[in-house]
Image (cartoon, rainbow, N blue to C red; front, side, top):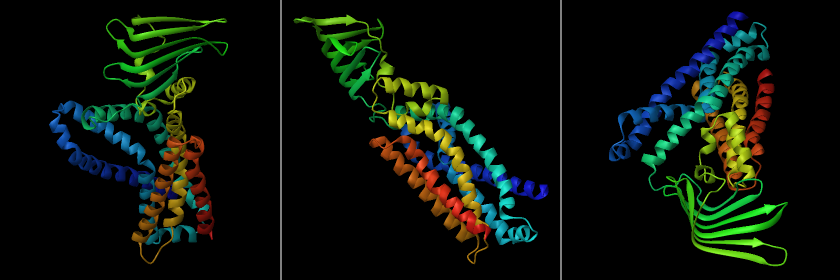
Length: 358
C-alpha cells in the first residue's frame, strides 16, 4: 500500500503545482494587458512593476488557493477513474476510506503551505500590491474611510472629525472629549485640525475648550492653537486594506487596538483574521468532495467531472463572498461568515463520501 500512497500523493502534489505554474503566467498576462495603459501613462519604473507583479502573484495565488486545489484533485482523480485505476484499487480489497488516505496526506502538506502563505508571505505581498494599485492604478480612489471618523485614542479620550484629508493631514469639525470615571470633564472643538509633520504638532483653528465644572462651565476660545495629542495620523485613519498587510500576531494586536478606538471596520479586519485558519480547513473539505465526485467513471468522461467540480467550486466561492460582504456591510458576525461555507460544504463532503463508499 505504500506504493499506492506514494503514487497518489505524488500525483496530488505534482498536479497542484503544475496547475499553479500554468495559471500564474495566464493571470499575469491578463492583468498586464488590462493595466499596461495606466502603467505606461504614469511612467512607473520597471523595478516597481516587477515587484508589483511578484506581489500580485502571491496575493492572488492565496485568494484562489481553494479553486486551484479543487480543480487539480478533480483533474488527476478523473484520469485515474477513466483509466479504471480507481476500480482496480478498490477491487483489490482497498476500502474507499483507505484509498482517501494519501489524498489527506497531500491535504496536510497543502494546508501547512497555505498557513505559511497566509500568516507570513501573503500580508507582505498584499501591502505591496495594494500600495502600488492605489498609487498608480486607482488614482482618485480613496484607500481610507476618512468621513465621520470616531476614535478612542486612550482610556479617557475620544475624538471625532467629520472628514480628514490624509494626503494633507487636514481635518474638519474636530472634537475631543475627555472623561474621568465615565464623566465628561472637558470638551475641545475646532473648525479645522492640521498635523504639522515638521514640528510634530497639531494646529487647530477656532479652538474652543469647555471645562465641565460642578456649578458652571468654563469656556476658553483661541483663533489658533498649536498643541500635542496622544494619537498619530496613520493610526487615526488606517488604510482599508490594513488588516491584509499584517502577520497573524500583529493583526490580533491591531484588531484589539481598533476595537478600543471604536472603529467601524473591525468586522472587516476580523474576516481577514478568521480566514487565515478557515482556508487550511477548507483544503481538507474540498479534497474530500473532489475525490468523491471524480472517483466515479462517468459516461461523459473527465469533462463531466470537471464541470461538476467547477460548479461546486464556484458555489463555494459564491458563499464565501456573499457572507463576507454581509459581515463587512452589516452586524453579521464575522466568525459565522467565515466558517459557514466550511460547515455547509463539510456536510456535503460527508454526504458525498458516504455515497462514494457505497
